[in-house]
Image (cartoon, rainbow, N blue to C red; front, side):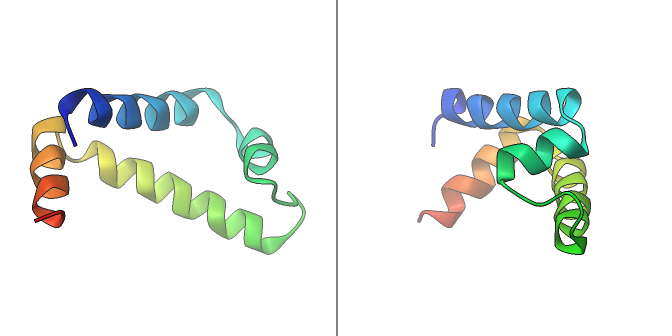
Length: 69
C-alpha cells in the first residue's frame, strides 16, 4: 500500500472521528443507538482511533507492507 492510500485511510478515519458524534456513528454503521451493542462498538471505534494515532504514517506503512509479504 503506497503512502497516498495510507494517507487517504488515515485522513478519512481521523476526519470522521473529529466530526462525528455517537449518533452519526450509529447512522453510518446502521446501528441502533439504543442498543448496548452500538455503545460497545462506539467504544471500540474510540480505541481504534486512539491506537492508530499512536503510530506515525511511516510505521503504519511498514506494518501494512510486512503483513502482505
